[in-house]
Structures are given as structure tokens and as C-alpha cells.
Amino acid sequence: MHEIHRPGSLRQTRPRTEGWVQRVDADGRPLLEFGEPKHGQPPIHLADLTLPERVEAMGRMGLPGFRAKQLSTHLFGRMETEAEEMTDLPASDRSRIVAGLLPPLLTEVRRLRADDGMTIKFLWRLFDGALIESVLMRYPGRITLCVSSEAGCGMNCPFCATGRNGLTRNLSTAEIVEQVIEANRAIRAGELGAGGGRVTNVVFMGMGEPMANYKRVLAAVHRMIDPVPEGLGMSARHLTMSTVGLVPAIRKLTAEGLQMRLALSLHAPDDELRDEMIPVNRHWKVDQALDAAHAYFEATGRRVSIEYALIRDMNDHPWRADLLAQKLNARGHGWAHVNPIPLNPIPGSVWTASTEAATAEFLNRLREAGIAATLRDTRGKDIDGACGQLAAADALGSAASGAQAASR
Image 1 (spheres, rainbow, N blue to C red):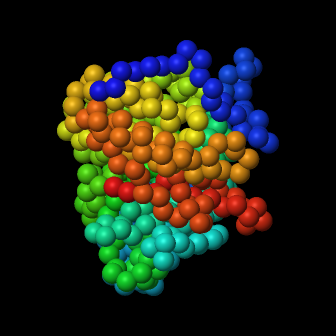
Image 2 (cartoon, one colour; image 1 turned 120 degrees about the vertical axis):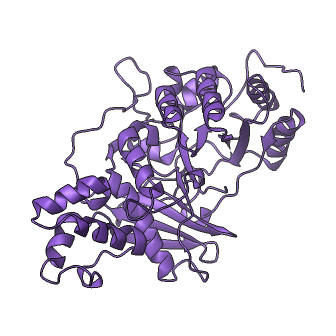
């Protein structure tokens, strides 16, 4: 383990961007948006409801409860949303049932491809005009979808494109789940190359802070992992929840007893820098976030991912690698895996990715200290579909961007 020589005064590129003013509160501190701005909500959708609630909804339509199971099987088992596909439902009631419980939630605006067709980025317009993106990626042996949980984001991290836009609103449970269903429909149509299949892995690394929309996100998780016809029948072990460090929500998720993977977007091991890079750090410090993440590991046995965007002359110093290793090892060994990834610059930013030499040194320092560390694979850079670039733009805005490409 290297001795940590932390400079008393370190020259580095400070957390500012050119041509953009970070949102601040009355005291000049970076503004955090935990409360959802007042917006109308999308119509209730089958995926918003538990199976018993779907039975009740059928009853209100004057239909027998078993129709709820049939409709759920069409949606979650077969990815069918059109009335004419549902031949086991009475012809006289099909259109009414679909209109009442399967209202359209996502309207596709744009679809971009990269990586020889193995990556697709979708730009979706919601019922109120809000825009979100999701990124679908085929890897050997798995298909991963990066989903958005909010339109925009209220965490105000200055190096993230989404953070510039602020929070428009939280997504509903069904708007989150529909991203998976639409991805499955695209795969079935052959849009992701040969091989067929379905989404096997979901990462909550798209637009938004999932933990800030906890109730709806957790309901979406259950729609994904509950067996057909209750849900999609996916494995909880193939779902990853990302957070910038909302400690109370991490502890709440720990108590759920799910086998999801937790990913903590740390990006700096010291509070001095992280206070500026990740404004929520002013509420819950590095050690508090790491303590909560370690408690999640102890409760679930699932190794925690530590996400670390390497920014040149900002957070890529060797002593910061040493400090990160020290903090992780202080809580035990083998409980965390660090995923450094070179920053994907966004327009107007003064920052860029770390050099290859600095990246190699950072990784070597971690590994020499016994920390598992893997340089993250980046997908979709040529379509702004990579880590930290998500900032959905309208059809006239030219720069529809991407989401975090998970390499799990």
C-alpha cells in the first residue's frame, strides 16, 4: 500500500463549466431538487398496478377478474399491446380493455445505432412532452438496457449533461417498465442484430437519480422481477441500482432484502472535492455513503460497484487512488469493485478524460492495494450514448444524448 501524500494545495481544474451557470440556492450552494415539480401524471397503466389491483380494475370495467391475468400475460409474457393480438379476450371488449389499461406512454422520437448495430439509443417523448432516453446493448451472453427513472435530474452534478437540465419530473412505474417492454419488442423485431432473446440485465443509470424516485422505481423493480403474469420474470441479480449517495434511501433498499446490485457513483474519495463534484455530498459525506454501501453488501452478499469517472487533473491523482483504496479496505476486503471510466466530455465543459498514463497509474494503485478494479467498457460514444452524456433534446435540438453503458 502506498503512503498517501495528500498535497496541502493542489492545482486542479475546478468544478466549473464554460457557458453554463450551475443552479444555486439563496445561499449560493448548488441546488438539489428532491421534491418533484408539480406536473400532471400519465394515465394509469397496467404496469402501475399489482395483479390484485388489476383484478379490481377489471371489475370496475364490468369484466371478470381472470381477464386481468390474460391481459398481464399478453403484456409481460408476449410483449403484446395491440387489441387485435389478444384473441383470447372477447372481441367486443378488446379495444375497451386496451384503451383502459394499456394507454400509450412512450412515443419514439429517434433511434440511433452504434457499435455495429449492437447498441441502440432510443429517444422517447412522454405524454406531457418530456423527453427521456434509454440505451440497449447486446453483449456476449447478455442484453443490457440502461433505463431512465426521471425526466432530467435534480442532483446538479456539474460534469453530467443530465444535471444541467434540472428535474422535470419523476417517471411513473409504468413509464420505467415500458422502456424494458419496448426494448424487448425491438429485439424481437431483429433490431439488435441476430440472436433474438430478451433484455436480461437492467441498469438504472439513465436520466435521473433512481433513489430520488424510490417508490415508483421499487415498484418498477417488482414488475421486472415478479414472475409472469405479475411481471416480466427477470432475475433481481441482473438488476443494478445506481445512486450518487442518498444514504437514507440506500439503507431503505438494504431493508428490502432484494438481490440487486448496488452501484455507488463516488467520483472522489475526499469530501473537499466531492462536495463540489457531487452536491449531495454536502448532505451525506463520503464515509457515510461508503458505510451505507458496505451495509448493503453485508445484508445481501452482493458486491457493490464503485463508479469513478476519471477526469484529467481533477480526480485522477495517484494519492486519490490510494485514499480510495484505504477507505474501501478499512471496511473489509472483497466487498467492493471499482469501475473507473474515462470521462466522456459534454459540450461546454472544461474537463476531459484522464490520460492513458494517469488512468493506468490510478488502476495500478488500486490493484496494488488489493482492490478489484476494471476499466469500464464504453458503448455508444459516437451517438452520445456513453457515461455522463445523457441530456435528451427535442427533435430540433440536435444533441439527443445517451446513458451509462454498463459492462456488467
